Amino acid sequence: MKITIIGTGNIGSSIARGLSQGSYFNASDITCTDVFEASLERIKAFNPELNVSQDNPAAVKDADVVVIAVKPWRVESTLNEIASSLDFSKQILVSIAANVSFEQLLSFIPKKFKTVHPTIFRVMPNTAISVLSSMTFVASHNATHEQKDLILNIFKDLGHAMLIEERLMGAATALASSGIAYAMRYIRASMEGGVELGFYPQEAREIVLQTVKGAVDLLEANQTNPEIEIDKVTTPGGITIRGLNEMEMAGFTSAVVRGLKASL
Image 1 (tube, rainbow, N blue to C red):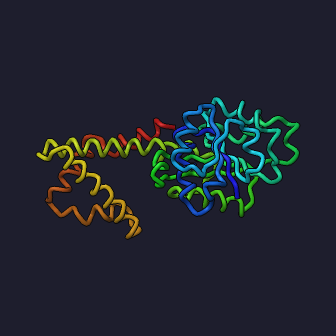
Image 2 (cartoon, rainbow, N blue to C red):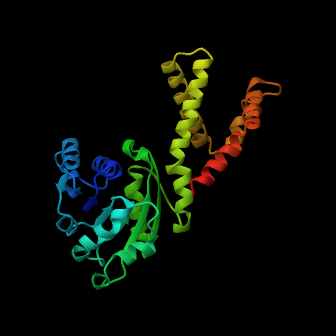
């Protein structure tokens, strides 16, 4: 199986690097394209077996999966450029572009090249894809069960992937793509608190990172609701419940929810 990734910026190159280390593709079956030679040189330096090109129409001809990883405002021109080289009866089109709907994607493909109804996926990863730990959301259009499984499994090689309805793409972006920044902000705040409590910055960083990792590991291992794990460390009249109540009085939960809603 072969895959072509059009656009080798941060997300496109991260996908290529991850897939080249995964179980679905050999590096020699991955082609990366970009308008900038420097981007192609960087991806080639990572793995010389990766194919690179600046000729998008030629790069997509033999691909089973074509990933559009360009900026949203370049999606239309990119699809116009490659449409004559695509065979929608055999190839799967995957768009990484945020806020570009299936309706728009279909309208960007010239009618004379749509001999069959295209199979298209919208995929929304987050920046942890660069360390193979992304929370990736997948929505499908005109896809078979087998095709849905294929795309899900390809992106599971880069972390975790979940199939959702297209209407939830905005919410998914807020919760996981923007959400990774919100998690980072909590980590930063805890580190600053740790310094105020007397730890050196590097010590505070180590403590907070391991604490957050431990919280995630507990929830995954026990398959519990966070409140159950919170109850285990909140003894009556104890210091933890005092700290939690102080955070809630400052609007902790409502601030998180409001931030997520503002991201839509």
